[in-house]
Image (cartoon, rainbow, N blue to C red; front, top):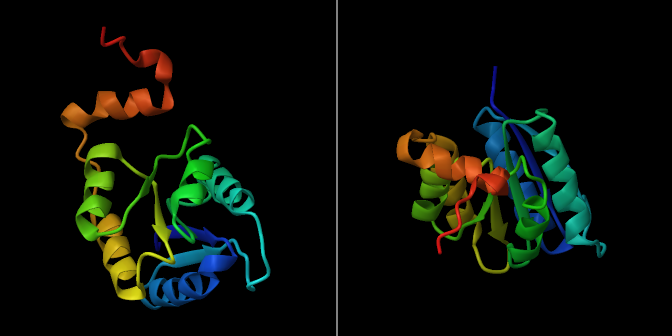
Length: 152
């Protein structure tokens, strides 16, 4: 069974999202495009929250969130405690987000990241696994702030 990926954007990233969706499907991934499907102005939080709900309920394995800068939609996705969304702009950060932070969503900035770099980031993200070990307790703290220790 192919890994299930959800992808969402705002109006600024519709073209990049479409290109990435086709590329992922050609690569054998089961991709659900959560919209939008045209360039009419939309609010990125709506699509970030929509993607986050799909990840949180277990209907997809990983997500890709895209807006003009990647910042706003990543903030929206991270409001869901089950999501660990990392804004990335190059493959090393995408790989480390997965390996060290068990990120299940990456965010990209359509106005800042070209299509080929976006593909390289996604390949690094999808090709990496969480390393666990010394990173596991820290990742648990991300979704459970009560587990964090006061550093003072």
